[in-house]
Amino acid sequence: MKIKKEYIILIAVAAAAVVYLALREQGKIQYKIPVLEKISTSSLDRLVVEKEGENLELAKEGEIWYIQPEQHRADGGKVDRMLDSLAKPDLVDLVSEAKSYTPYNLDEAAVIKATVYEKGNPVRTLYIGKPSNNYKYTYVRIPDDSRVYTLQGTIRSSFEVKREGLRDRQILLFSPADIKRITLTRGQRKIVIVKSGGDKAEAEWQIAEQTGGEEAFDMQKIAEQLQSLSLLKSSSFLDQTPQQALLTLELEGVTVHTLTLYEKREEGYPAGSSDSDSPFILSEGSGKEILDLFK
Image 1 (cartoon, helix red, strand yellow):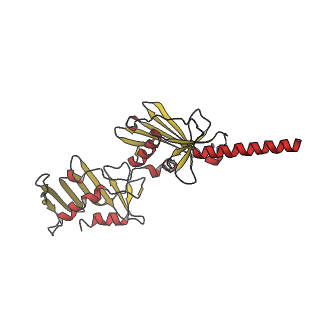
Image 2 (cartoon, helix red, strand yellow):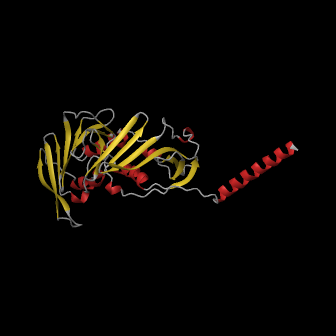
Image 3 (cartoon, helix red, strand yellow):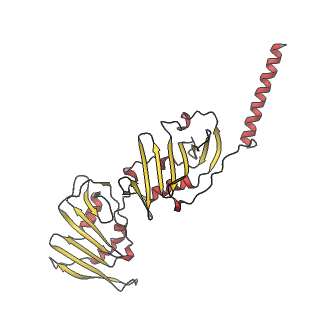
């Protein structure tokens, strides 16, 4: 009789488990998933990312984010991805209430803690774990809640970026349409070209000054390079600026933008820019294209 009773209990437990799983699969067991209020990224002015071995702090000045304390300009696109993840998080499901965080990379050794601030006050903190197996979600926790949730999208990689990898590698900040005057200097040679015709589509470039040689000069080639120059990115950064310049390029528009190229090294061409807070390396191909403007 006792054995029969135990069988009945086991069958009841098994049946309850089947019903539970079926209802869960059908979404009929309702969990109260926290709804996180969306916040405006435009009002955020500080971001702190804490992870094992390295903490990262960013501060916004005007419309530009800077890495602290070095004050290096940060890549705006990479910062925006982090801010968007924190400002508009969409919690999807409750995964665990067991307070066992290691399987989700939410334990102390693996978790990434990200906090955004507005006027010195923290407005959102998120504990970020690993992506789900199907890479559609990210395991996360929120403050004052021991449970593990899934969040829509895979966001962890955005916060794993290293300090050096977060630096803005764009070396010249200008709009090609704004440039009205270009000055190239290489050794004793100098040429100045200006745009005639204002902002009209038929505007042409003309030589305004040329010294150190009267050979033919392809002005249109320089003008055509403005677009690629506005998109040019460095491959790495340097601690010190070299001494001997090969070529200096000045682009005059709303303000004057200067690019200086130095003697080639094994890794590429050292260079400096008025729009970059550090000297940097340009790839061999990019450096050669600039030098070829003025042979």
